[in-house]
Figure 1 (cartoon, one colour):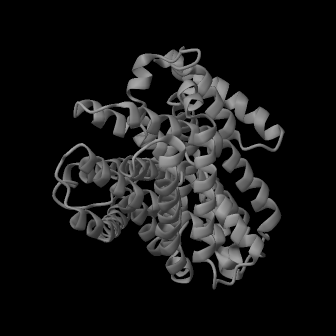
Figure 2 (cartoon, one colour):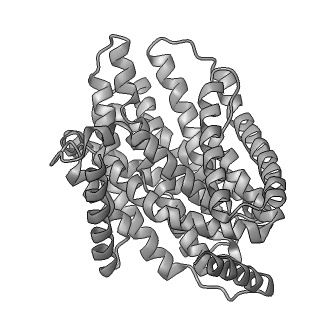
Length: 420
């Protein structure tokens, strides 16, 4: 397994450098390396690495969501919180409705099966969106209207909403009992419980870190470990009480940033360094999950379906921003930023197929759902990442720093200097 990790690191770093030379996001190269080395193409990756890929991807996702938490300020949430909440639910709903209505005629699925497919496709990829939004925040592009922060916050909640709906639909399809009212009501409850728990843990960590004054490296390892445990709590408690572990992880960073900014900047700087390795693992292992032959099976009909779904999602974004102060070009950027699929589709694309097999049902619809999920990754992750950078560079204006922002930058530079 060590050899496979070394091969992935070398090739992904090379691909990242080459792609960036052509002004293409490096993560696209990492995805392609994963596809090439994965079991569905060359097949040189160690099976043991593939076996633990779910856990490695989860850790990488936690790292990027922690970075998101350490970038969102309370005053920013006050300005964009309402819009972000709308963006977390309305575009995914519009996309899901479109897929449910169109998939039966394009793919021959029933409306119920089409709804399950919609619950797989309707989630945006935080792994693609969040790092790019953090980069724009650092560059202060769109800062006057908090556009990257709004997209960052919305994309992080969007997935929770879609995954909950997915779990309900799959359970109902295979004949398991599912309390729909409780599951739907559980969405806001899980967000509130997750945020509240994260804020409480953030307050506790602030006191512990100040009392014992561990090095920044130990602080960041503590935060990552606690975040992983919070996701485990989410899995264990899901049958009894809804709890959003990833939201709790983000809330930890949010609290520390608000109360102890210097400490938050030190941890954030360390997370940025860890992300260099985590990003390679995340996107290469997502690529390794891609079965090109399955995507080919989805064919033209699957491509048309994904295109229509993205149009519906874009319409939902425009509806959310209808009365905002954003220009038409800025609204278009938000719609583009909300297009990539990767993380959730790689994680749950095969769940309907496995559930159908376990229930002794016809697995054909599950295979088709998986094929379209794979196709969505191939079509939207690379194109979406490139489009976000290209459109963002042209549409988002770099804002001058205010006095408070200049102070923030000075604090962050000081923290990074201490780490070197």
